[in-house]
Image 1 (cartoon, rainbow, N blue to C red):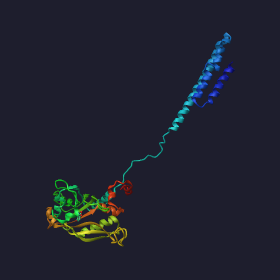
Image 2: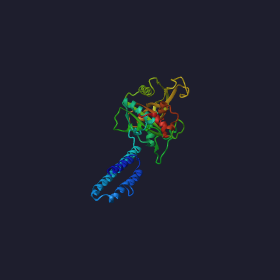
Image 3: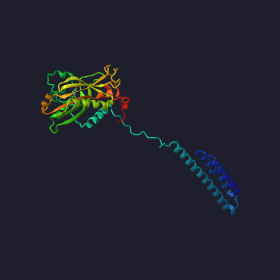
Image 4: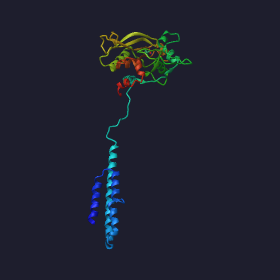
Length: 343
Ligand code: DAH
C-alpha cells in the first residue's frame, strides 16, 4: 500500500515538474486531488481495510495527500515566480540609456557683435550707456544740430507717435542725453548699443536694426585718436590684416565728418563681389563733435572737443559672418541661428 501511495506522489511530482503554465497545472492538480483522483480512490478503499489497520492506512493516505498538495503548491509558486520574472524582463526600463540633457540656445549674431564690440570698447575705458527707444524730437534731432527744417532729417525717416515723439532713428540722442546728464563728469567715453528704427526695407535695410553709438569727450580728443580707435576696432573684429580708410562726409552733429570703410577681408583690396569691385566696404559714420552740438547740450566748446561714431550692428554681423539678408536676423529661423555657437 505504501508503495502504491509513494508511486502516486512520485508520479505527481514528475508530472507537475513538466508543466509550464498555471492552467495546465491546475487541471493536473484537480486530476490528482479531485473526487475521481487516485487519492480519493485510496480513501474509498478505507472501508475494506481491517479495523486495526484503518488508522495507519488513513494516516498514510492523508500524508500522501499533503505531499501532493505541497508539490502542486510549490509548482504553482515556481510558475508564478517565473511569470513575474518574465514580465519584469519584458517591461524592463533601460536606465543606462544616456539622457537628453537640457536644450541650450545659441547666441544671436547681433548679440555676438554687441558682445565683441562691448568687450573691445570697455577694454579701451568706455562706459556702456542706455537710452530710450521712444525718443523726443528734441533729443533725436534738435540737440544734434538737426533743426526742424533741416534736409538731413530726410535721411532718417522714422516712425512718429502721437504727441510728436518718435522711435529713435539712431543712437546719437544718447550723446545728447549723456552731455546733459550732470551726474557724469567730463572727460568721458561712452558707447551705447541699441535698437533704432527707420522707414527702410531691402536686403541690407530693415525697419529695425542696431547701432552702437560712441562718444569720447576730452580736452584734447582728436581726429587721430578717432582714426586709431576705429582702425584698432576693425583689426579686433576682422583680424590684423584689416585696414581702415577714411573719407570726408557730412553729418550735422560732426565737423569734420567722416565715412569709414574697411578693407575687403574677402579679396584683401583686389576687388570682388562682396566689395562691389572697390576693395573697400563702407561700414560707419563718424567725426569730431560739432561745437554747435556742445553748445546745444551745455558743454564748454572752447574747452572741450570730442569724437563720435555710429556703428551699424547688423551690418557688422553681416560682414563678419557672411550673412546675405538683414531680415534673417528677425525671422526666428533655427537652422540659421544654430550656426552661431554658444558664445
Ligand atoms: N547717427 C548716424 C546715422 O545713424 C551715424 C553717425 C554718424 C553717428 C556720425 C555718429 C557720428 O556718432 O559721429 O546715420
